[in-house]
Every structure is written in C-alpha cells, then in structure tokens.
Image (cartoon, rainbow, N blue to C red):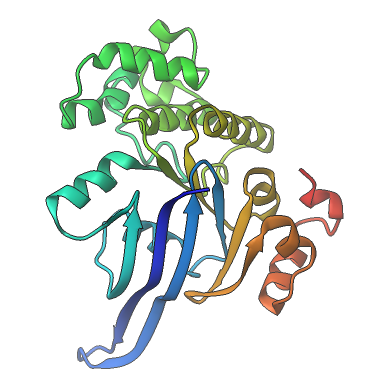
Length: 265
C-alpha cells in the first residue's frame, strides 16, 4: 500500500532563557521523529500533554518552522516553495479539540464551511457546502446553513468542523483530540462518522490523543511519544495489549477503570 505522508528525522527545539535572556536549557519538543502514514489509514499519535504531539501537527502544516528533518506529502517534499505549500494547504486539513474555538462565532454555518472554497477560488461553493453537511449528518441542511455556532450543540459544532475540513477534498486530516471535549455518548458518534468518511473517501488520518481507548477504536497503528521522542510504535493492538516500554505501560494503567474492556473496540 502506498504512503501519503513520510516524516523523517523531524526536530524542533526551543531555548529556555532566564530573566536576562541567557539560555539556561534546551527543550526538545520534537526529537528525531520519523513515521509513515499510508493511504486510507489512521496513525495514532499518543502521549501526555507536552509530549510533542501538537507540535508535530504544526510542523506538518508548516505553521511553525522545523529545525531539521523532512516532511514528504503525496510524493512532494514540503518546503517553503509555493507549490509545496499549496499542496499541504489543499491536501491536509485540521480538526481541533475545541470546535467552538476553531470556528468564527459571528459567521453563519454556511459561511464557515464555504470559507476555504472562497480562499482557493473553488466554484459551486453552495452545492459543495450542502453536500458536506449531508455527509456529516447535519440536517435539515437548509436550516443548519443559516444557524450560528452558538445555536448548535458541541457534537453538532464538531460536525461543522469536519464538514469544513472535507470541502477541499483532502487526502489527509489531522485530528487533534477531536472528541476529548465532547460527552461520552457523543464521542462514539463522531468517531464512527470519521471512520465512515475514511472508508468512503480513503482519507488518511493522523489522530492525536492521550485517550488510548478512543485510539484503539479508530486507529490501526500507533506511536507513543514521550518528551518529544518515540518510545514505542507498531500495530495498535500489539502496542496496547503487549506494551514494552514503561511509559506506554503507565499510560495504559492511567485509563480510568483498569478493565481490559476499556480497550475493546
């Protein structure tokens, strides 16, 4: 199976300085990280807060510059060239943790979803918006289009964020803790929706989470990050049921109820 994303030896370091501006330590936010995501598959990036998960997402999206390493998306190395930046902007979309913070509360739903289409000058925006709203099961479509974000529930707002991510027909979606702020009953619905979209359109996902139970529900392969480094990786069942590294073992033991069924699909 062909790959959609290859990350090689990615590094991002930050200097910690004292009051006088003198460097006192070096924070290795991302430290020599390499991985591959295949077409139509999900790679889970798991670890505690501060492990480097979200920094990797920002580096892939070119939101911050890398110190070294290579990012190859759809056979093109991502650099500062216009061609490669457009490739990543069109081909990779982001779904954030808090749906309310990631959309403009003063815009109608139809305008929130159509904004990427207008930026990239893609025609037939209204038809595309209607189609993606139907895809994420936000209906009746005509009513939803005229609403504002505060008029929707948390689960509905996350569906809006997913719809916005779909309008450019991305080959990959980075989902950064996409269900962590939702009620437990809604989490499964959103994960099932994402799974259905992946199967239908063969979208690849980089699923960022600290929640290993939802990770197993959605992912095929997993990377465990600790202090910017990969400490364990492999097929998700193998890593979660037979963890080798003590940090992975600690993450699993931190699941709210120490019951193997918590990791059952």
